[in-house]
Amino acid sequence: MTHFAGPGKRFMGLVHHTDAKREWAYDRQSNIGRLDKALDEANKRGWSVVDMSTEWSRIYPFDTSTLEQKK
Image 1 (cartoon, rainbow, N blue to C red):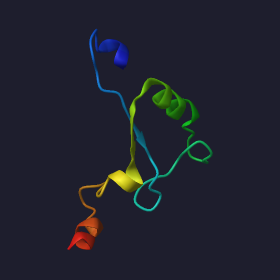
Image 2 (cartoon, one colour):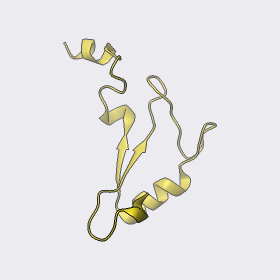
Image 3 (cartoon, rainbow, N blue to C red):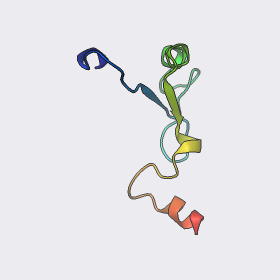
Image 4 (cartoon, rainbow, N blue to C red):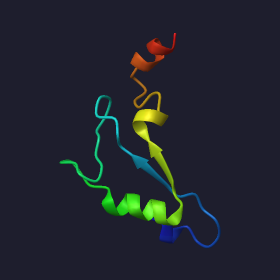
């Protein structure tokens, strides 16, 4: 999709699905999907990589478990 963005600066981000408890977890060596090329490319190009398990307090709008933990 980035080739449609045109010239100039743009944000590049990669969501790293690492939270098997609340969603799915897949990485370089997983049965669901592999992120070898994506993680290498993100590192090489300085993209932002967001780790779901550590950086997202809530994944789904109906998930209230994290809201209860903060009280």
